Length: 449
Image (cartoon, rainbow, N blue to C red; front, side, top):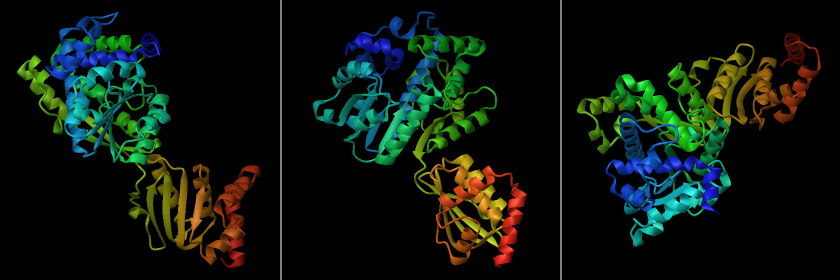
């Protein structure tokens, strides 16, 4: 494919050239060698059609970039994974660093970037270490392209992304999350990304440097990045905005992850950040202020929710009712003991809705082995669970008493069909819930339930 066509279709990879030139400017010799091989210049990589890089902007970008590059590598090494997946890999020399440590490296990026980056980076790597290094052109939103690129990997993966999410819209970020969850489910490992709090890190780095010109430089940098990438940046649900309630914005970003079967651990930046050469480009006072500000920033280590997660339900227990809950593989597993009636059914519903707000749920599985009784109020909770679960509600361990109640009230032994039947009664008649409860109660009394 003609390189010019690839660049015109997706110019965002040009920001990767800006990045490797900045890394070279920090004193990173391998980055400098790559920049020289690609004939990159300051004018080409740092300026845009509408603006020129200011000294404050350049120093902030250098510190931000070097911190991100070195810290992400430090966290990735600490995970102990023997395969690093750099998505996107851009033009940085990380492949050489990890190959020297005996770690398999997979550099994934847009085909246009890979066509230029692969020969430039491989030229830096010793022949005996090249078998550890792999490059492949992919689309991060295309799961099959990622799966094909990583089909020969061994052991758990550490997937790193730096400066990717800021260029994606919510649909694209959602697809990326689904794809990473797929890869981690198949291979194991984790996803390390600096992107969710990248705006905070930039603000915390820029403020000591720019001082009174803070807002001016901030706006100028955003305009320059948008010119380079030809997309609107920083709009996705996983980029935590400092505007408004920052804590609520972070909570919403975590919920977005949870909706895609992922959970995040915040890795406080100052605890993992090695020495940063580019801090020498600012005053000692500015450098110290930046170091202190990094106590407030974090990178995210993201894993799947596939493993069973216990849910605290102790506050819902009583003498007549107890419930144990955990979430695994998008299924809420409940173990019920005692009576689910008018007094205890609200507790069960409250637990379900609390868990559903925090986790992605496709199904509910209920162990009824110690369930002594369920009233119409409890059945109504099961119906609510059914309607909120794409893959339905399943009952196991049903004893004779509970089975008889299910049969008497229109629920057969397979809850999925029975709940649908009850749902049609509620939705297709004018019977009010209170009257329906009365009918069930009378039936239970007549039958001695």
